[in-house]
Length: 295
Picture 1 (cartoon, rainbow, N blue to C red):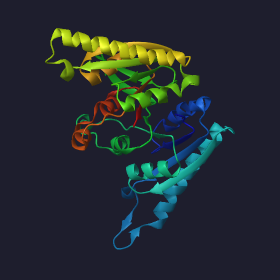
Picture 2: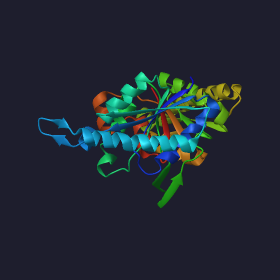
Picture 3: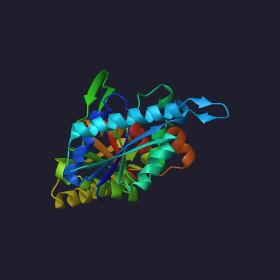
Picture 4: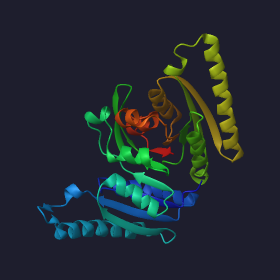
């Protein structure tokens, strides 16, 4: 797996440019082309009864986006990267996926707005829809995040995001592809943590001997992953936990000092995943770290 073409979608929120610069570190790992994308939601364009949208509003919003993108490209001033722009009108989630397909993007980067009380249960934003439907890896970028940890309110800035990824695996095919994606970052990576959680649902009704067998099997699989990573010339560190899967992954990412969480996308049924989120989507929503989801 290689990340040569990147689609970076932005709504021009605060620190979006800082987030772009952290992602562009992928150039060291082979990034060649960056598609700067902005979708103007139809609701943001004035509507005239029986007449559709006002062309003047569309022109103004397009021009504002173009000028900002031009300034970003000029500021970055990297002749080794190819920059293009896509500014379109429509439903953001559908347009992002359309643009990624048209540009043959290897990764989609989306931002994350501040969470509301409602989003603690219902995270049906365009970001979740993109995470759920994309056929290519999606990075939920988070440059600066405020979060709660051990009773304290903390602020984190994510700048060197590729340095210490934590690969959270459930041994599925998407998790295997997540390992390949993590190895593709080799020039940027200092160490890869490999994590697995024996969830409560899986161990709840098992006898102690059965739980021990699961632990032994998980430890063997972790060693196999770590050996493969080390064979590629990267340090690896295994982490095994028991308990609630999402909470355990978040805790391991903090204990390990991770800079990024990489996960295969979980495959729950559509209704449950949309309303409650699969494990991967809930980690993406709750973690203070950027999260890369691999389909």
